Image (cartoon, rainbow, N blue to C red; front, side):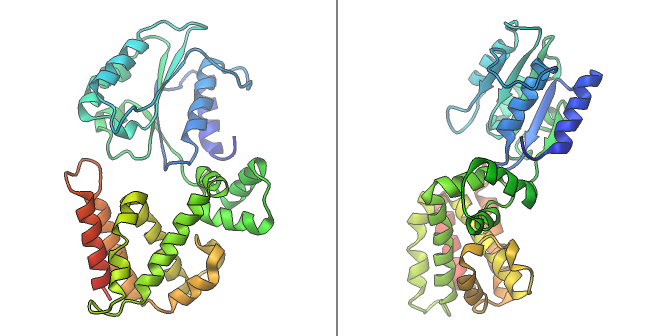
Length: 315
Protein backbone atom coordinates (compact mmCIF):
# COMPACT_ATOMS: atom_id res chain seq x y z
CA UNK A 1 0.00 0.00 0.00
CA UNK A 2 1.35 3.42 -1.00
CA UNK A 3 0.93 6.44 1.26
CA UNK A 4 -0.26 7.02 4.84
CA UNK A 5 2.96 5.62 6.31
CA UNK A 6 2.53 7.42 9.64
CA UNK A 7 -0.97 6.04 10.14
CA UNK A 8 0.07 2.50 9.23
CA UNK A 9 3.08 2.59 11.55
CA UNK A 10 0.99 4.02 14.39
CA UNK A 11 -1.59 1.23 14.01
CA UNK A 12 1.10 -1.46 13.93
CA UNK A 13 2.67 0.00 17.06
CA UNK A 14 -0.69 0.05 18.86
CA UNK A 15 -1.33 -3.54 17.79
CA UNK A 16 2.03 -4.74 19.13
CA UNK A 17 1.57 -2.92 22.44
CA UNK A 18 -2.00 -4.15 22.88
CA UNK A 19 -3.44 -0.63 22.85
CA UNK A 20 -5.31 -0.78 19.54
CA UNK A 21 -8.74 0.84 19.85
CA UNK A 22 -11.86 -1.27 19.25
CA UNK A 23 -13.50 1.38 17.06
CA UNK A 24 -11.93 3.46 14.30
CA UNK A 25 -13.02 6.18 11.88
CA UNK A 26 -11.17 6.64 8.59
CA UNK A 27 -12.03 10.04 7.14
CA UNK A 28 -11.04 11.41 3.75
CA UNK A 29 -12.34 12.30 0.30
CA UNK A 30 -13.77 9.72 -2.07
CA UNK A 31 -10.98 7.80 -3.79
CA UNK A 32 -8.29 8.66 -1.23
CA UNK A 33 -7.79 5.02 -0.21
CA UNK A 34 -10.07 4.50 2.80
CA UNK A 35 -11.17 1.04 1.60
CA UNK A 36 -7.63 -0.38 1.17
CA UNK A 37 -6.66 1.15 4.51
CA UNK A 38 -9.71 -0.40 6.20
CA UNK A 39 -8.91 -3.84 4.81
CA UNK A 40 -5.26 -3.44 5.85
CA UNK A 41 -6.34 -2.50 9.38
CA UNK A 42 -8.79 -5.42 9.47
CA UNK A 43 -6.01 -7.85 8.52
CA UNK A 44 -3.79 -6.33 11.21
CA UNK A 45 -6.52 -6.93 13.79
CA UNK A 46 -7.27 -10.50 12.73
CA UNK A 47 -3.79 -11.69 11.82
CA UNK A 48 -1.14 -9.29 13.19
CA UNK A 49 1.80 -11.64 12.63
CA UNK A 50 1.53 -11.90 8.84
CA UNK A 51 1.48 -9.59 5.82
CA UNK A 52 -0.23 -12.25 3.70
CA UNK A 53 -3.28 -10.98 1.82
CA UNK A 54 -6.19 -13.43 1.82
CA UNK A 55 -9.92 -13.56 2.38
CA UNK A 56 -11.15 -13.52 5.97
CA UNK A 57 -14.59 -14.79 6.92
CA UNK A 58 -14.51 -12.66 10.06
CA UNK A 59 -14.55 -9.39 8.12
CA UNK A 60 -18.11 -8.15 7.64
CA UNK A 61 -18.57 -5.28 5.17
CA UNK A 62 -21.66 -3.08 5.42
CA UNK A 63 -22.45 -0.92 2.39
CA UNK A 64 -25.42 1.46 2.04
CA UNK A 65 -28.28 0.15 -0.08
CA UNK A 66 -29.78 3.58 -0.65
CA UNK A 67 -29.21 7.23 0.14
CA UNK A 68 -28.94 6.58 3.87
CA UNK A 69 -28.13 3.91 6.44
CA UNK A 70 -31.10 3.62 8.77
CA UNK A 71 -32.15 1.91 11.98
CA UNK A 72 -33.06 -1.39 10.30
CA UNK A 73 -29.55 -1.73 8.88
CA UNK A 74 -28.04 -0.86 12.27
CA UNK A 75 -30.09 -3.63 13.87
CA UNK A 76 -28.46 -6.03 11.41
CA UNK A 77 -25.03 -4.62 12.30
CA UNK A 78 -25.71 -5.10 16.02
CA UNK A 79 -26.87 -8.65 15.35
CA UNK A 80 -23.70 -9.35 13.40
CA UNK A 81 -21.60 -7.93 16.23
CA UNK A 82 -23.13 -10.47 18.61
CA UNK A 83 -22.24 -13.47 16.42
CA UNK A 84 -19.09 -15.30 17.50
CA UNK A 85 -16.08 -15.20 15.14
CA UNK A 86 -15.57 -18.26 12.92
CA UNK A 87 -11.81 -18.50 12.44
CA UNK A 88 -10.29 -16.93 15.51
CA UNK A 89 -11.11 -14.82 18.52
CA UNK A 90 -11.72 -11.55 16.69
CA UNK A 91 -14.01 -10.13 14.04
CA UNK A 92 -14.12 -6.80 12.21
CA UNK A 93 -17.16 -4.90 10.97
CA UNK A 94 -16.44 -2.29 8.28
CA UNK A 95 -19.15 0.31 7.64
CA UNK A 96 -18.70 2.11 4.31
CA UNK A 97 -20.06 5.63 3.72
CA UNK A 98 -20.74 6.11 7.42
CA UNK A 99 -21.61 9.76 6.67
CA UNK A 100 -24.95 8.33 5.46
CA UNK A 101 -25.90 7.00 8.91
CA UNK A 102 -29.06 8.75 10.10
CA UNK A 103 -29.09 10.36 13.55
CA UNK A 104 -31.43 7.61 14.80
CA UNK A 105 -29.13 4.94 13.37
CA UNK A 106 -26.08 6.49 15.05
CA UNK A 107 -27.87 6.61 18.39
CA UNK A 108 -28.80 2.97 17.93
CA UNK A 109 -25.21 2.04 17.15
CA UNK A 110 -23.64 4.08 19.95
CA UNK A 111 -23.82 1.54 22.79
CA UNK A 112 -22.46 -1.26 20.59
CA UNK A 113 -19.48 0.89 19.57
CA UNK A 114 -18.98 2.06 23.15
CA UNK A 115 -19.13 -1.44 24.66
CA UNK A 116 -18.53 -3.97 21.86
CA UNK A 117 -18.62 -7.69 22.49
CA UNK A 118 -15.24 -9.23 23.23
CA UNK A 119 -13.05 -9.36 20.13
CA UNK A 120 -15.34 -7.17 17.98
CA UNK A 121 -13.81 -4.21 16.16
CA UNK A 122 -15.53 -1.48 14.14
CA UNK A 123 -14.09 0.54 11.25
CA UNK A 124 -16.23 3.41 9.94
CA UNK A 125 -15.35 5.00 6.59
CA UNK A 126 -16.60 8.52 5.96
CA UNK A 127 -15.96 11.45 3.66
CA UNK A 128 -16.65 13.92 6.46
CA UNK A 129 -16.97 14.03 10.23
CA UNK A 130 -19.65 16.71 10.04
CA UNK A 131 -22.54 14.22 9.87
CA UNK A 132 -21.26 11.95 12.65
CA UNK A 133 -22.44 12.65 16.18
CA UNK A 134 -19.81 13.87 18.67
CA UNK A 135 -20.73 10.89 20.86
CA UNK A 136 -19.80 8.51 18.02
CA UNK A 137 -16.57 10.36 17.28
CA UNK A 138 -15.49 10.40 20.93
CA UNK A 139 -15.73 6.60 21.12
CA UNK A 140 -13.48 6.06 18.09
CA UNK A 141 -9.86 6.54 17.11
CA UNK A 142 -9.99 9.00 14.21
CA UNK A 143 -7.52 8.69 11.34
CA UNK A 144 -7.53 11.45 8.71
CA UNK A 145 -6.36 10.44 5.25
CA UNK A 146 -4.95 13.46 3.46
CA UNK A 147 -3.94 13.61 -0.23
CA UNK A 148 -0.65 11.82 -0.80
CA UNK A 149 2.50 13.51 -2.12
CA UNK A 150 3.38 14.02 -5.77
CA UNK A 151 6.14 11.40 -5.44
CA UNK A 152 3.75 8.87 -3.90
CA UNK A 153 1.20 9.58 -6.64
CA UNK A 154 3.82 8.93 -9.31
CA UNK A 155 4.78 5.67 -7.59
CA UNK A 156 1.13 4.62 -7.35
CA UNK A 157 0.25 5.46 -10.96
CA UNK A 158 3.36 3.74 -12.33
CA UNK A 159 2.54 0.63 -10.30
CA UNK A 160 -1.00 0.45 -11.69
CA UNK A 161 -0.85 1.90 -15.22
CA UNK A 162 1.45 2.15 -18.22
CA UNK A 163 1.34 5.76 -19.46
CA UNK A 164 3.75 8.29 -20.96
CA UNK A 165 5.68 10.81 -18.86
CA UNK A 166 3.50 13.63 -20.22
CA UNK A 167 0.32 11.72 -19.32
CA UNK A 168 1.81 11.01 -15.89
CA UNK A 169 2.33 14.72 -15.15
CA UNK A 170 -1.17 15.48 -16.41
CA UNK A 171 -2.74 12.74 -14.30
CA UNK A 172 -0.86 13.73 -11.14
CA UNK A 173 -2.15 17.30 -11.55
CA UNK A 174 -5.73 16.16 -12.12
CA UNK A 175 -5.69 13.61 -9.27
CA UNK A 176 -4.73 16.15 -6.55
CA UNK A 177 -3.14 13.44 -4.42
CA UNK A 178 -6.19 11.16 -4.63
CA UNK A 179 -5.32 7.72 -6.10
CA UNK A 180 -8.92 6.90 -7.03
CA UNK A 181 -9.17 10.08 -9.10
CA UNK A 182 -6.04 9.05 -11.02
CA UNK A 183 -7.59 5.64 -11.75
CA UNK A 184 -10.85 7.22 -12.93
CA UNK A 185 -9.11 9.78 -15.13
CA UNK A 186 -7.00 7.12 -16.85
CA UNK A 187 -9.72 4.48 -17.23
CA UNK A 188 -12.90 6.51 -17.74
CA UNK A 189 -13.17 8.90 -20.72
CA UNK A 190 -16.05 10.65 -18.95
CA UNK A 191 -13.65 12.04 -16.36
CA UNK A 192 -11.81 13.93 -19.11
CA UNK A 193 -15.19 15.10 -20.39
CA UNK A 194 -15.92 16.49 -16.92
CA UNK A 195 -12.80 18.68 -16.94
CA UNK A 196 -13.52 19.71 -20.53
CA UNK A 197 -17.03 20.74 -19.44
CA UNK A 198 -15.60 22.95 -16.68
CA UNK A 199 -13.23 24.59 -19.18
CA UNK A 200 -16.08 25.19 -21.60
CA UNK A 201 -18.18 26.70 -18.80
CA UNK A 202 -15.36 29.06 -17.78
CA UNK A 203 -14.82 30.03 -21.41
CA UNK A 204 -18.49 30.88 -21.88
CA UNK A 205 -18.59 32.73 -18.56
CA UNK A 206 -15.58 34.83 -19.58
CA UNK A 207 -17.50 36.16 -22.60
CA UNK A 208 -20.43 37.49 -20.55
CA UNK A 209 -20.11 41.24 -20.10
CA UNK A 210 -23.56 42.13 -18.79
CA UNK A 211 -27.02 40.68 -18.12
CA UNK A 212 -28.09 41.98 -21.52
CA UNK A 213 -25.29 40.04 -23.21
CA UNK A 214 -26.74 37.32 -25.43
CA UNK A 215 -23.91 35.03 -24.28
CA UNK A 216 -25.78 34.74 -20.96
CA UNK A 217 -27.98 32.09 -22.54
CA UNK A 218 -24.94 29.83 -23.02
CA UNK A 219 -24.56 29.71 -19.25
CA UNK A 220 -28.22 29.47 -18.28
CA UNK A 221 -28.98 26.53 -20.60
CA UNK A 222 -26.31 24.41 -18.92
CA UNK A 223 -28.59 23.78 -15.94
CA UNK A 224 -29.76 20.34 -17.10
CA UNK A 225 -26.22 19.19 -17.88
CA UNK A 226 -25.12 20.31 -14.41
CA UNK A 227 -28.00 18.44 -12.74
CA UNK A 228 -27.04 15.28 -14.62
CA UNK A 229 -23.39 15.72 -13.70
CA UNK A 230 -24.18 16.46 -10.07
CA UNK A 231 -24.35 20.04 -8.75
CA UNK A 232 -21.84 19.37 -5.96
CA UNK A 233 -19.27 17.91 -8.33
CA UNK A 234 -19.79 20.77 -10.78
CA UNK A 235 -19.26 23.37 -8.06
CA UNK A 236 -16.10 21.62 -6.90
CA UNK A 237 -14.79 21.47 -10.47
CA UNK A 238 -15.56 25.15 -10.97
CA UNK A 239 -13.67 26.01 -7.78
CA UNK A 240 -10.67 24.05 -9.04
CA UNK A 241 -10.79 26.00 -12.29
CA UNK A 242 -11.02 29.33 -10.46
CA UNK A 243 -8.12 28.32 -8.23
CA UNK A 244 -5.99 27.56 -11.31
CA UNK A 245 -6.88 30.90 -12.91
CA UNK A 246 -5.97 32.74 -9.70
CA UNK A 247 -2.62 30.90 -9.58
CA UNK A 248 -1.87 31.92 -13.16
CA UNK A 249 -2.78 35.53 -12.46
CA UNK A 250 -0.46 35.66 -9.45
CA UNK A 251 2.43 33.95 -11.24
CA UNK A 252 2.50 30.75 -9.16
CA UNK A 253 4.09 27.53 -10.50
CA UNK A 254 1.86 26.33 -13.33
CA UNK A 255 3.03 22.71 -12.81
CA UNK A 256 0.70 22.47 -9.80
CA UNK A 257 -2.38 23.38 -11.84
CA UNK A 258 -5.23 20.88 -12.01
CA UNK A 259 -6.02 21.91 -15.59
CA UNK A 260 -2.41 21.53 -16.66
CA UNK A 261 -3.46 19.46 -19.69
CA UNK A 262 -4.82 22.63 -21.35
CA UNK A 263 -2.41 25.23 -20.04
CA UNK A 264 -2.58 27.50 -23.10
CA UNK A 265 -6.35 27.82 -22.83
CA UNK A 266 -6.11 28.46 -19.09
CA UNK A 267 -3.58 31.23 -19.64
CA UNK A 268 -5.89 32.89 -22.14
CA UNK A 269 -8.82 32.61 -19.72
CA UNK A 270 -6.78 34.11 -16.88
CA UNK A 271 -6.47 37.31 -18.90
CA UNK A 272 -10.25 37.64 -19.15
CA UNK A 273 -11.05 37.48 -15.43
CA UNK A 274 -10.15 40.00 -12.75
CA UNK A 275 -9.17 38.74 -9.30
CA UNK A 276 -12.21 40.54 -7.89
CA UNK A 277 -14.52 38.62 -10.20
CA UNK A 278 -12.82 35.30 -9.40
CA UNK A 279 -13.30 36.02 -5.70
CA UNK A 280 -17.02 36.72 -6.20
CA UNK A 281 -17.42 33.46 -8.14
CA UNK A 282 -15.77 31.54 -5.29
CA UNK A 283 -18.20 33.12 -2.80
CA UNK A 284 -21.19 32.15 -4.96
CA UNK A 285 -19.96 28.56 -5.35
CA UNK A 286 -19.38 28.16 -1.62
CA UNK A 287 -22.80 29.64 -0.84
CA UNK A 288 -24.47 27.22 -3.27
CA UNK A 289 -22.48 24.34 -1.80
CA UNK A 290 -23.84 25.08 1.67
CA UNK A 291 -27.40 24.98 0.31
CA UNK A 292 -26.72 21.51 -1.14
CA UNK A 293 -25.37 20.01 2.09
CA UNK A 294 -27.02 16.77 3.32
CA UNK A 295 -30.17 17.36 5.36
CA UNK A 296 -31.13 20.58 3.59
CA UNK A 297 -34.72 20.44 2.37
CA UNK A 298 -34.21 22.46 -0.80
CA UNK A 299 -34.87 21.89 -4.49
CA UNK A 300 -31.56 21.17 -6.21
CA UNK A 301 -32.74 22.49 -9.57
CA UNK A 302 -33.68 25.78 -7.93
CA UNK A 303 -30.19 26.08 -6.42
CA UNK A 304 -28.56 25.41 -9.81
CA UNK A 305 -30.76 27.90 -11.68
CA UNK A 306 -30.25 30.58 -9.05
CA UNK A 307 -26.47 30.05 -8.99
CA UNK A 308 -26.17 30.24 -12.78
CA UNK A 309 -28.14 33.49 -12.81
CA UNK A 310 -25.93 34.93 -10.06
CA UNK A 311 -22.79 33.91 -11.96
CA UNK A 312 -23.82 35.81 -15.08
CA UNK A 313 -24.95 38.70 -12.89
CA UNK A 314 -21.43 38.95 -11.37
CA UNK A 315 -19.77 40.37 -14.48
